[in-house]
Image 1 (cartoon, rainbow, N blue to C red):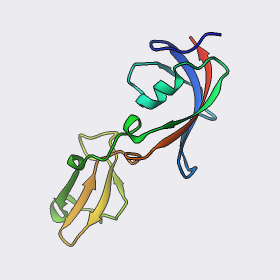
Image 2 (spheres, rainbow, N blue to C red):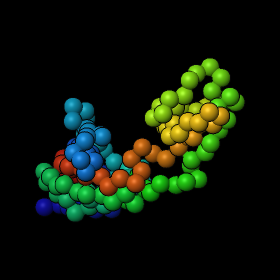
Image 3 (cartoon, one colour):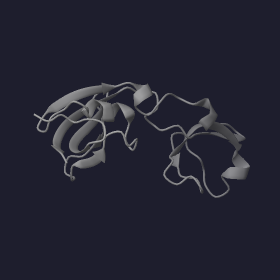
Image 4 (cartoon, helix red, strand yellow):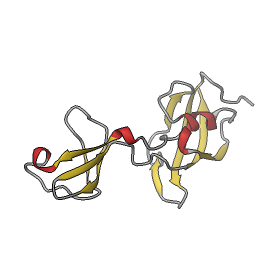
Length: 140
């Protein structure tokens, strides 16, 4: 039986979970995810997990933080003056923002003092090991 390899275009169904079992992403109810292995458009560990699978095969793959969303980068954490940045809103701890010029990058408020707000642009799943249930539907 044919096995998926680097450069193949594949269709998969998947469910992504954290180690505590909380689901953070799933293709259930949607069309299968179609991608080219090695394109770099998906998590490195996810693409690597599909290599060697045959159509109809299912597997559970544990992906380390390094091959998932990476490790925490302190350079993506900044403090801004509350008065300069939050003129028309009250910042709340844990609130997610999307800043002008940073579309698609979630920025989370991780600290609030009397005068400053700490913003973290690391992905919410950075530093976490991930578990994916993968079902290879088809190799195109």
